[in-house]
Amino acid sequence: MLNSQAAELLTMLAGAPPLASTPIEARRQAATRAVSLTGDVTELAAVDDVLVDTVPVRVYRPSVSPGLPVVAFAHGGGWSIGNLDTHDRMARDLAARSGAVVVAIDFRLAPEHPFPAGLDDCVGVLRRLLQDGAGLAVDPARVAVCGESSGANLLAAACQSLRGTGIVHQVLIYPVLDLAGVGATESYRAFGESGYFHSTEDIAHIVRDYAGTADVRDPRLSPARAADLSGLPPATILTAELDPVRDEAEAYAGRLGDAGVPVELRRFDGQIHAFVSFAGVLEDGVRGRAWIADRIRQALF
Image (cartoon, rainbow, N blue to C red; front, top):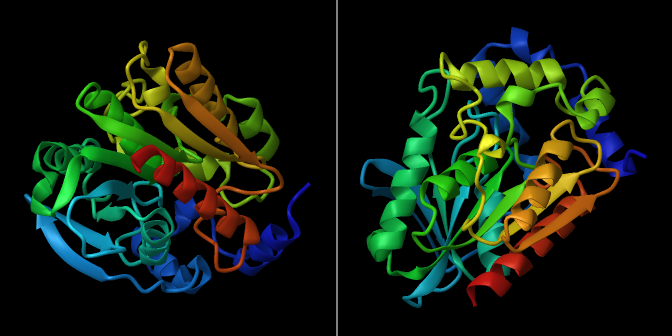
């Protein structure tokens, strides 16, 4: 059953034109206008915009003490919308609750920069964090990742690319993991046409924008298609019951466990895709962030 607060949110968001017929700039402006729904602005010890090599990042410090563990964060938005500002409140919240430094990656967006641009940006930042803390006075031996939706896709793929390099933990929030399987699962059939935030057609459209001419079966695009998941970082995976991508995320959790990777899976019943972003109006969004932060704290401290 749809959560009552989620139902109110969907009513608030109703009436928008179909995603496929909405210009990309209009979608980006809508995401900016929705920032007030993403929670309060949590004050931190320091927040700075810097470059890691050529990639813009925003560094959230709960303390100015050097040597803290670090979480690389990648926002959701279908690889094509969202930025450091749209997910600023979520990143602040995770830093404050976990006690770790959060480095939010402002990766390049599709369709202007299709695959593999965004993935390359995330991998590049992670390499630097693992090598020398990217000059940010963080502990390169305690690096985790946390991604939401399409951002979780990028960081799941990055963890596969950087297997064995020392990433301590991966947090995947309702991840989109099988771009070749859009519409193919029971959760797609049940919720892809139900008006629960994103439709199957919406997801297919943003996948085309991101993938371009690449083969969507490539594990760098579809991490769930990787043949071997052994040796990946321990994982925390959060799913929403009424989400078209629920089944692929939960199947990935099962495959990680079968491959010997420690994994913790939690499904939020009654919830929709993106609910953790909307913590300003959804109590389950607050609960989801608290659980994620607790898992990060357990992994890094």
